[in-house]
Image (cartoon, helix red, strand yellow):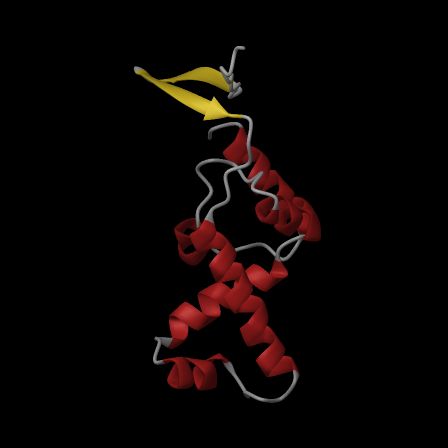
Length: 123
């Protein structure tokens, strides 16, 4: 009787500079980015429902700087397919919440897709 178990973990080794990285086939969710998107949509709902009048009201209630609220609210403008990819853990590896906070996001969805493509190309 052989009770040995075997596990297969799909790995692909990629070179990045002089480092060698193991990349799994499984999605890698960026929890910080997903939390930021969740908060943004919740805050946008509060404004749309009339519960809060502005991002400044939300900032006072949450004890945050108004710029943080406004930076995160921009995430509600993301193209649906980009949000879907983020939710599935299929975002480019270097794309992080801090990028969205420091950079203006174009309203045009095609322009957004070009930005995501640039991340995927490693630019």
